[in-house]
Image (cartoon, rainbow, N blue to C red; front, side):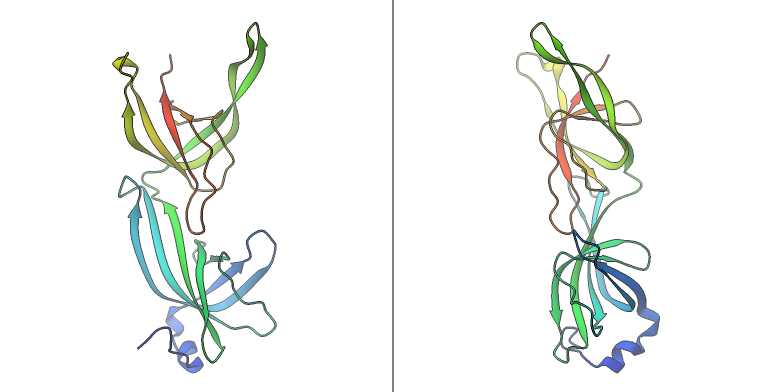
Length: 216
């Protein structure tokens, strides 16, 4: 059977054990469509990033029935499935009889076994003799779920003992952060951000590169 071309409405509603309620949310606004019976036709999962067990990506094909009077689902919409997982629609096709939409969607999540709660700190500035300087740090976000992956070691040629780890920090949610902030783990490890947190593409998670900080 060709999934994209199969368009018999009675066949769709017959697969009762595979149906689940989902909600489609338009990004950036409050428009919501509830689908009492949606069908997750196929799903695949693969690891991404430096560690195979840290960040997981799932791709699925969803079949959504056309609802009279409701807007059509669009690329970029978020789909919340029956278990509460969030998917981003990456391609939407309306079938020939206009009774259903076939949606390719992606969900990216952190592996719970590798994630930890981190704190995002911002600097406390004070004007000194030579101008503004950082005198302390204060929490900007107390608890954000993240995975930290080691990319490489930065070893200064003039002082190998000052080697620092370069890491990628992937966050479970969208945050705003930049080079003047740092991440602190529950074990007291400190990482200074060296660029701004990326604005994630649809179906991906925000990430940033950072360097470990030697604390005393």
